[in-house]
Image 1 (cartoon, rainbow, N blue to C red):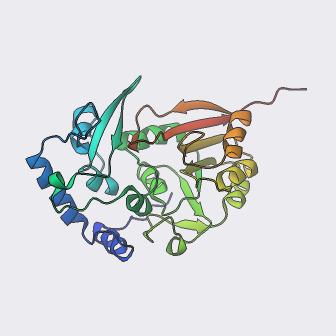
Image 2 (image 1 turned 180 degrees about the vertical axis):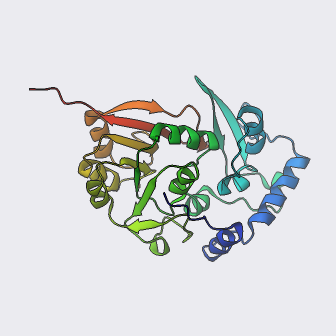
Image 3 (image 1 turned 135 degrees about the vertical axis):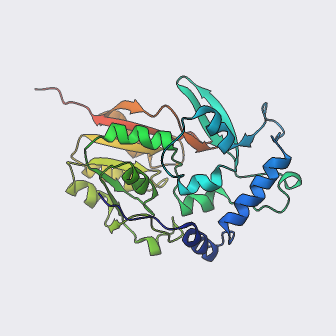
Length: 278
């Protein structure tokens, strides 16, 4: 298992500033916290219920974690959010917008910039713990890992995760150049073909690009973790989802998700369907 520490808040902020992000994480957090002290909740036209800070919703509904806060949650905990009831509890949806009359001069960092800094999917402590439990002692191969954020969070939970991506982080346009763990530079299909004994994991594979389908086709193993939008959403290709439907069986779905408002991404585990004997 790779135990390399991730970047500090200062390193994240410095890298983000080079790519057009606000220069100070701490300044943005403090501005948003002051805003929430003045406005306990925010009403958006057309929404039946008010938005409140994500940190408040999680404190009310999620178990206390013994782990240090995940870096993205230090900021996103201040973002406006809704708790959406589900069969198993709640999902949480956050919004990257506040009316100027409410936020004053606090600049809201957009979903795209946050995604490039951390990842396109948003982990919660409970969802990472759930996924680590599903993985157990088996090694995991993540393809298209980007900055390696999801791999690093699973590694914090003791999982053995090998992160790979076709592009080095410094040249990867899906990231800001921040690296959270060691990442091998190798194509998705090549990596998947090399490691049939690993669980194959993909987090928000690029929309309308063949990466996810080529990796799934090359993979000879028996378990896939897919984190992203369902068919018809903003991930992968129709060929990928057709292959999942044909050859794979959904065995587990995380009971709690954190996602951006308007998206439908989930954390799902698949097992290869058994071929009937002749």
